[in-house]
Each structure stands twice: as C-alpha cells, then as structure tokens.
Length: 226
Image (cartoon, rainbow, N blue to C red; front, top):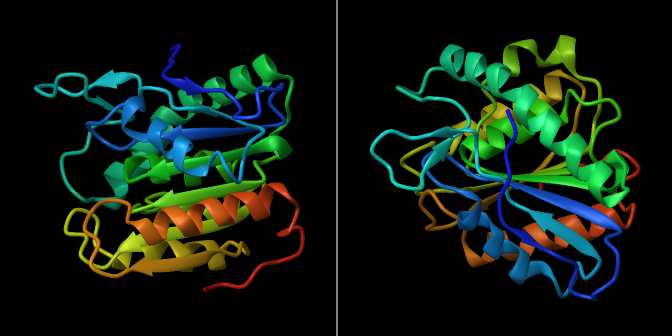
C-alpha cells in the first residue's frame, strides 16, 4: 500500500544529505508532526523531513489515520499491529531513500505514540538500520521477539512525559528494558508535567540528539540513560 504526506525540504536549499521520517500517532496525520521540522532546521539545515499519513483511516476521526487499530493497551494486540503495518512503513522508507539518493546511514526515524511503536519495530529490524531512532510518548509492544529479530542497533532516544495518561511512563522503561535484553542501548528522558505530548524540553533534547547522531557522535555504544 503506497502512502505519502507533507514534506519540508532542507533549509539550506541544497540537495538533502540526510532524511528524517516522522511517524505520527493514532488518529493523527503527517501534518501533526511535520511542524517538528521547523523546530529543528537551524541545527539540521541539510535534512529532508517527510511525515507520511498512516495507511488506514480511523473511523469517526476526520483526517485521522492509524498504522493499525487499537482497542486496548494489550502487548499482543500491539505486536500483531506493528507486524502487520511494518511492510508499508518499510516500503515507504525504501522509496524515500531512493528518491533522495540516500542510504539507511543517512536516515533517522522519529515517532510519536503509535509512531514510536512503529519506528522501534521497523528500525531495529532493518539491515542496515537507520542511524537513529527518536521516540516520543511511545512503547515497544514487540519486545518479546526483539532479541531474536534485531538486525541493527542505532542510537536511540526515548522521551516521555510523567503525566502521560494515554501511554503511561512505565511503558518507556519497559521499552528500555527490552532494548537492553536485546543488546541495544538507549538514552531516555522524563519530561516533567507533560501529558501525552511533546514538551519544550523534549523538542530541545530530540533536536540535539538527531544532530549528534547524524554527526557520528554515537558510533560507539551509548549509555543506557540520561
């Protein structure tokens, strides 16, 4: 299934040297995340940003899309969901890398909520994998199979609000533990007073993380927290 969404070209007006794919959450769309590009272009002037709309419309939500249906916070349901949606996101990533003449080592995935689930699932199973995964307010429902399926170990930054009542903060720690079990490292940050969203501190930390990842700062193993 082909998908597409809003784009923002490099701020320097040149050919893209890096690619950031922004993966939105349940019931949202690409417009919901493409605004992050404007927050980060000063530090990432050579990056092409793309925010595809997920393939499935959400019933009763005008202009809302989903990577997979969610009826409850159930890891097994989430695992089936990310598996079913992974081929669509993988095909889009391949398409965009070809479009801009880039490779996976020029790629970062940025997810929010369900988009974080997708970014972790897909990014850790690509070979070669992306240089970085930045996940806001998410979870990792495919933790149980990761150890046997992981094919890449990109730099990973997880950011979560301590007032999140949609995907509780504990889900970030569960994801971090799952990554450690699979031999991967991650950094994490708790945003004080932030509900299910992205706070100013998360924007700043996320942008700094992407800049460092693209510069090769995380070529060596990175610490398990921050």
